[in-house]
Length: 329
Image (cartoon, rainbow, N blue to C red; front, side, top):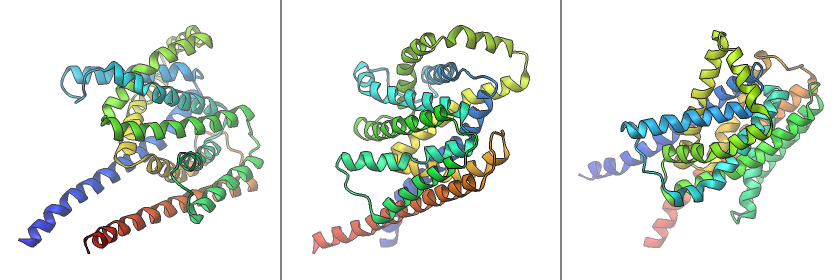
């Protein structure tokens, strides 16, 4: 009987662990794929704001269709919830807009190295919001990541100041965005699908103003119609829209099931594979000793950071039962 009771207690924990792992893996794979797909589409279609707008239209339309036909479980639209999530939507669009803009001029390995600074930004934001100082291992690993970025940048012959600035600005907005997603999922009990819908719906007015103000709108549509006879372009374009939906869902899912910090750690780890592939696909990388050394240091710092956070999490789990036992004595 005791064994059955123990098994009953373990099963929910195993399900939770499986869900957490699946969410993290799904986000990692989708995130890695999205970098290459976006880079491929932007090499042929430079209108990044129009691309983002179409991705959001596709996401909102699909969720609305799914909700209407009963395939997607989501509560009806709430004006109060929309008001609460407006900052989240603005940060999300700023993050993706600056990230897409940076991909136009920055090669994939350097783009990933720069985006790997997100954990540093999350830690700094956490410190100022009262989460306390990071451990020595975490602090040193983050410093190693930053040093790697500087060394790699010195050896980057394709250095693009605008692209670098856009990537670093994207890091700031991604940090704020992830922290808000974690807070919204925990406090308001919103599902991944609901967060996706509100984010897409609230994004559209902002994006429509942006593509009109920047003058993208007649030219971006003209180019789209010009390329409608290119099967290869249409395949990549449709894949970009689909993967935009997949990436948003897995990012919300991972952040809600795990945490904002876990999402950034997954981003760091998937960057190892993306960096390697980036040297041999889509071009734009001139190999140099400084560039390679910096990227290796940056990647090592990212892996060390992930390991340090994993050790911290394990230590907290071990401490929790001990504290419970102490209280019962």
